[in-house]
Structures are given as C-alpha cells and as structure tokens.
Length: 449
Ligand SMILES: Cc1ncc(COP(=O)(O)O)c(C=O)c1O
Image 1 (cartoon, rainbow, N blue to C red):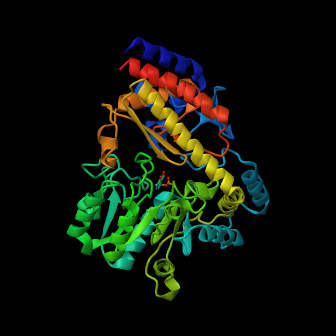
Image 2 (tube, rainbow, N blue to C red; image 1 turned 30 degrees about the vertical axis):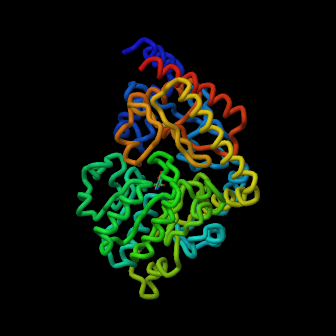
C-alpha cells in the first residue's frame, strides 16, 4: 500500500481507538459489525472501524473518541433541521410522560396527517407505517390491486428500501437481482429504465403497457446519484402513465419536504397518483407514509369492500413520531421562505465550488444534485456529462470512493453517498471548512492515482 494511505490509516487508527474496540465487539454481534450495510462508512476495506457516535447537536456529530464531525449525512438525509432541534426535543419531552406508545388511534396522528395532506398536492389520504421500505412495498401493492395489472417499472439505480417487491436494479443495474433469496426480476414482475431516458421509457411502455400497474420513481434520483430531472422528463412520464392507465408513484422519502415545503411534486408541479414519504416527516423517529388519491387509498378500507392490506404495524402512528413530525413540519412551514431559499442556494453554491475544485485538480469525479442534495461521483475516467443513471453504478471507482471517505473523516467531515445533504443548521463556516477539506482530499486522491 502506498505511503500516504498508510499514514492516513495510522492517523485514523490513533484518533479512533475506542471506536475500534467497539467495532471488535460489533463483529461478534452483527454480521459485518452492522445492522445496516452502509453504516460501515467504507471503512471495512481499510480494516478500520466507522466512528461510533456518542451524541449529536445541530450540524455536528461527536464520537466516542472525542472527535467532532461536521455532518453532511445528517441521518440519511432525515435531519433537515439538524440534530437535536429544540422544537422536536420539546415536543417529544411533552409527549413522553403522557405515554410513548398507545397501540391505539390518537389525535396526534390526525394532526400530522392533516399537515402532510395540506402541504402535498398528490396526497388526499394516507396511512402511516414505520419505515420507507414498508411504504414503497404497500404503494406497489395498492397499484397492482387498483389497476389489476402485475408489473412494476422502476428506475435503474433507484433505491426504495430492501423489500422483496422493489429490491432490484439498484447496484446491479444490468443483472437486476440485488440479493440471494429474492425471486428473479422476471418472477417479481419488475422492469427498469434509466433515469432521464425518455425514449427508453417509451419503448418499455410500448412493449409492456398492458401489464404495467405502476411506475415508481423518485422525482429527483436520490441514493442513485442525486440526479435532477431533465426538461420534460417528469412531464412525459406523467402523460404517458395517465394515457396508459398506469399509476405513477413518487417515492419522496428523500425529496419530501427537502426541496420545497410542497415536496418535489409541488416544486416541479407534476402530481403523482401515489406518494411515499419517510425520513424528514418523522422528525428523527421511525416513520413511513403511503399517501395519494382518495379512490386508490380507499382500497385499504376493508370495512367498505376494500381488499388491500396496507400500512400499520405495531409502532405505526406512535405518538412520539407524530409529535416529532409535527414539530418538524411546523418549524419548516413557519420559516419556509427563508429555509428553502437558504438550503437550495447553499446547495447550488456548494456544487459550483466542488465543480471548480474537481476541474482545478483534474479529478475523475463529477458533482450532481438538486437543492440541498449533493453527490460527488468518483469515476474511472473523467466525464463532462452524466448521461444515464446506470452509468453512475457501472463507472464507479470504488477505491476512490473509499479513499475519499477516509480522508474526509480524518479531516472531521462526515460525508456519505458522495457528499450528502444540507440542514438548516449548517453555518457558512461549516461550509467553508468542508470546502477547504474537500479540496485537500481531492488533491491527495488525484495526485496519487
Ligand atoms: C427514496 C427512498 N425510498 C425508500 C427508502 C427506504 O426507507 P427506510 O430506510 O426508512 O426503510 C429510502 C431510504 O433511504 C429512500 O431513500
């Protein structure tokens, strides 16, 4: 291994002694030491531990070794108000003495549901569940039942959680199946197309339109690479799905309340039939939402000839998530003009800065994003345009991705999925420091590749 990398590993090891101890224990308790595969933060290839986090506040994470990080991962993009926001803590603290879970209907869930319905053009009715993974599975089930058709179309690279319905064509953009133990994609009835490929989509539709129940997609491709829709893409998909009696499901688990108070569908003014949400709407507690047109959701009304079981779960609509979600949406709504302008402007400025840095150092990397979603793609070759969502996976240089992660962590910047997300607590200084450390990192990676 090259000297500079040996040195970086040494620095990391010295700074993370306690995390490394905990990591050894974790290996005995969990496969690969984690309960979520991506939480090793690319440290496994270096035989290092991810930092074990002890606490968090605002834009910062503090690990068990006393290191502080400026956090651009902010809980998988969920903590749009930053960590431990006062309004959320207050709402939870007021709720807890009254009961942390009832397992019964409660008024708190009505309040949050109404806020979501009022804010989201495509949601007339909804059901709560506990994760985004459940939400997308239930939305697909609703679509199949409603249209009486079997196939679901998804975007290559699109992540909708690990459920058996949709865990196809995420990293394995050519093969389809992402895990052993799943049905083949043919048996599962999953078809795929590339994000922004209007012609590819039309052809897929032409060949399969009578069998397709729904197209599920993120309006802005999220974990698949923070790729914005090109002009006319969302509109064409909306038109074509309507024309062919196919439901359009927007998975807004990342984009919901992130790009705009009215979510991506409000921002782009393209309204889906069904919407899934999660992350931000739970205010840092577990949540999933399946929402959409009244007539489609009413299929879940088993009292009124409904036939589709969706939503629920032991912890669904628990009052802690309901009040945490309400506190988040109240805060966003109250400050919406200022917050979203600031998040979106900062995102744009950061992408411009990153672009300059990558060009200056002739890095084989490319930056994408929309609003406060930012992603740096490390590729094997330098490119000037990202043409398809498959390209993100096929050309990925995972060695450089791992190195980027290690070097940024050593410089106290926590990034993931290329960079991450902004929250309202990121200060000008947080951004300046991140850009400075990023330039240092890009320079080292580029000079040594
Ligand atoms: C777009 C999208 N859909 C679904 C999911 C799954 O949500 P959860 O992790 O809450 O199950 C995620 C999670 O990252 C996501 O980004």
